[in-house]
Length: 250
Length: 259
Image (cartoon, rainbow over the protein chains, first blue to last red):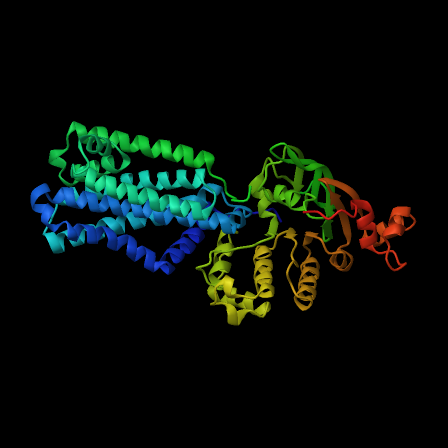
């Protein structure tokens, strides 16, 4: 009997089921990822009147996207690589891209959940509502923004193999992004930091999210931020994919 | 499909490097259909590197690997589909139950098995009551049984086992040998790596002794003993007068302890 290669759709279905089950069993970290941006949004209630609903929502979603991409995805692949889980999958007749595609699909669902959680909290606590096109466009830009942090996470896992070092690095980057992002955006850290933050991966994602919430107010600045977001994602992903090792021992 | 009806695996002139270090140097051997073939060698001899190249985890610097007629370099997916693999340190997603791990691997080998069929497979290896435990909660012997059943779930023509009995107690080791025999009885060939002379003599039809990345002898265990019985080096390392496979192995690979 000739050897049969399993269909890619069958392989992906099996991987997706396992990866979604794994995510479901890690409910506590999922809830934490959803709760942190919601808490930040609620704590900024006073700022909504001053800076606008789009400002508060876009910052909160950005923080949620960073947690999803950097903390969730990166630490999971660093751990699975260290435990040899990827090696076991790779000896099966599966195209290697399906292993990562399945992981990324799970994270894309997380991005949708984070965005939805912030929208619901914004509506419940701050009475922030968007137009239907604003909601749809924001989901779209949240996925683009999320890809920046997923590719940043991929780069971290590509450059660092030790899972503990990956974990501490992502925590550090997460903390820096939140602090410099939030306070730099408010101008508390000075003009230079504000400008730097504006064109950083935090600032560009926040800008395109805010722009997509109010499509009528989309400016050249927002378009440049969208281009830069794509550029950041491409650079991080290129480095991350090129440097990624499937086995932490070699 | 097979270009050679006898060989299920043909390795020819295989070399694997880690940077400048040559882990495997010009290794050639073949595994016959229905044969249990052992790769025997001290630590760092190149056994796992050889296996990793066969599994597609390492890209060889040179040489060819043909599995069931498929060149592993040209048709890697077909070559891998013909293989069942148990890695040296197997780990599965720690969040998944045993039954879910089996469902995952059935799926990625293109099988559509129902939950009841999976449970029946677990029943065959006396692990049905462990189906809803996580892999890490199983004992070493139970983990080996699960790994072995996953390695053979798609009925592969060649099963690769990397040091399958390491860390097992004598009872579990004997049970695993019986399972390896049972794999052969179903028509599969088995290639295993081991440090254990007892394992090589008890289970393997033929063995290759590998050291410093080179194959230094290939034959049946008894033929190797007979061939080297009168070597002065073998006699000098023999401890109880009777020449054993271990004496031959020590004589061929040296007494130096490897890291």
